[in-house]
Image 1 (cartoon, rainbow, N blue to C red):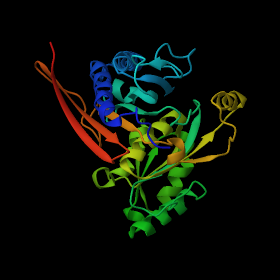
Image 2 (cartoon, one colour):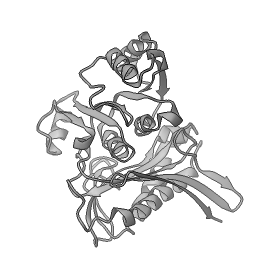
Image 3 (tube, rainbow, N blue to C red):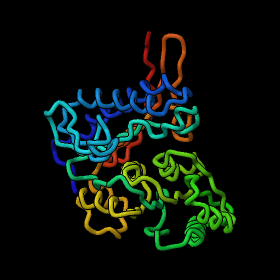
Image 4 (cartoon, one colour):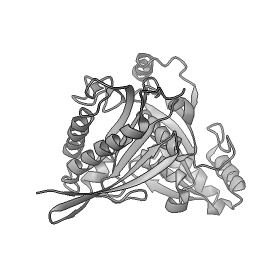
Amino acid sequence: MSIPKDFNDRMLSLGLARVAEQAAIASAKLIGHGDEKAADQAAVNAMRDQLNKLDIKGVVVIGEGERDEAPMLYIGEEVGTGTGPGVDIALDPLEGTTLTAKDMPNALTVIAMGPRGSMLHAPDVYMEKLAVGPGLPVDVVTLAMSPAERVAALAKAKGVKNTDITVCILERPRHEDMIAEVRSTGAAIRLITDGDVAGVMHCAESHITGIDMYMGSGGAPEGVLAAAALKCMGGQMYGKLLFRNDDERGRAAKAGITDLDKIYTRDELVTADVIFAATGVTDGSILSGIKREPGWITTETILMRSKTGSVRRVIYRNPFE
């Protein structure tokens, strides 16, 4: 799917960076204050306010939840001025609400934008995810492989030993067997408490982060956001929706998904060229967090365009009273 001529990703990208920045600045006041909901709401309010200043006909396809669950930035909400291109928007106003509340690393504000129809309308269910960085053979690892087989295959492709591989996994009881199997290979594991969009992004910059592969189950909406990031940064990703009950299968049907067993590739999760922005809220492996000094606040944002493969880091120092 090519980019429609009216989707000027180059011009829209700087506007998207500002959306991420303002959400981060708004939530920064609540870092370490122990109130996840307040931090998230501050980011939501700021992100929505900035989106409504952009000349787009935007629809939130990955957002804060269904309309009856989220008062703002809900799935299906229309944002923007109503003039300009029709776009899909995937967002997580504060990825890592717990990380922010506890002042822990890797909290981000995250947003991606593409032409209408370019992103999977993922229901709010779990997704099994697997991701590696760029420069590797296609299907070097797959969801059909066991965790141990993935480690061995990736080590062989990289020309290293299993002990040189580091896997990022979300620390949850459901992953205990996976963690034990990966450790049995000799590979290292970096456990994260939250924030699996950042976890997937780590794979694309393994020379900086030290992460070679991401695996495990987490939110499906975050899977689409992570795929948008990898589409810009390079790398492979696979996702399979996981359903625990009929209610969740009903959510998939409502989203227009008929094949409940489908394994999605990165380019099936995000089918067209997109732009992606993320701003650090707390310090992390990819981005520095918000820095305050008398009269000034400084943010770091990563801004990417899949069309060109460009990755821009923006340091924004802004006066405030």
